Length: 479
Image 1 (spheres, rainbow, N blue to C red):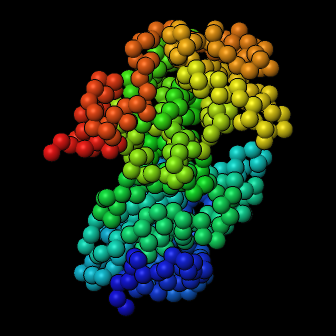
Image 2 (cartoon, helix red, strand yellow):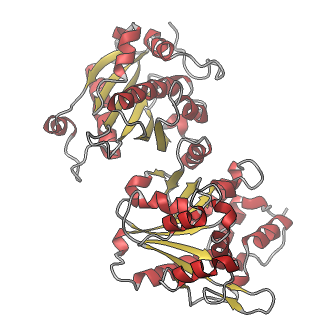
Image 3 (cartoon, rainbow, N blue to C red):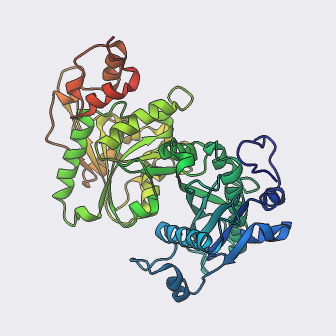
């Protein structure tokens, strides 16, 4: 049988789960190991049940006992087992064993793979629904280095058996996608939910690596997770690699700045720096347990009706070049963002925003879908550990400064605003540059596209150089 892999299956024809597993089994070149910890042999069993598994499965294993698992894969520094580090150790160890035990000279056409997952399902009290890491290392040519796909899932179902079944289905989808859709990573994302209710599992992190995916930017795949509704928020670090929100936010103080950052300006960085200065003067402001996030909403990225991936990447590159951690979220309302943060931390949450953003928060139209209206939203927004760091603006009518003391909200909501203001929930950023306050991203963007000069000094150091060298936001080099 010839090596038959990516690109030969029409996306519109979704094969059954059995058909997917059988197609893998009947390819005599695909051969590998299944290592599953925490939710049974849920993925491997699909390949056993469909038939023809003897030519595909080298070994399956479940190192359920912690001591036994440690003896095989080594101990984790943090003592945890459901981690990305554990998954990577499993994939590397089992692949090395496969290479060691199978004679390549006798199996020159074999395409080795290792599939692994480390999972914890819902607890007995049903308070913690569970989560897990899943991944595959694989080849599409016998002599090529391994490529890898790893993902983190959060369970939403309230039954352990249902979670196990969903995990098994997604595992089959991942293996099938790795071999038969590896030339279309976005399709792999969509394939992961074949035969699964999208409400059953959330995928909040995915990373593609290796020679097959050398031209893939994982930030774009993060964006795709949010666009497809597979998760509500994703994060990536300054190096461009996707981050697990639960790990980054867990028990951390959070300072979040929402904006378009198109492009990031000196105003944005001043807001960031002044917020840090204010926060560091607060008690218990441990910098080692604090994370700053530059957040962009999906609605901001879809201002023209559709997501412009090139535009997104331009913003991402600039923020990453400044060493910032970026979040893409589907939280149009601030209270939803705060709810999300509070899932992972009970420590301080600080939202840095301009006066216009705060005025918008007090617009009742955003809360008509809530039974408790704006009061319900504000109950979720201004919980005990949240404060707003407010950056002022220049009054266009008289040139004065508008801050928390002179801001105007609807008369009906004035008492509500005063309640939060005089309970120290709104803190003014007092040190600012009035010249920088006149900088607007839209004006700079228009200047860049028009080929005008003078915008360079309105951006943080190094940003204008990057825009020019990479020709971002429509910049064109002079001929």
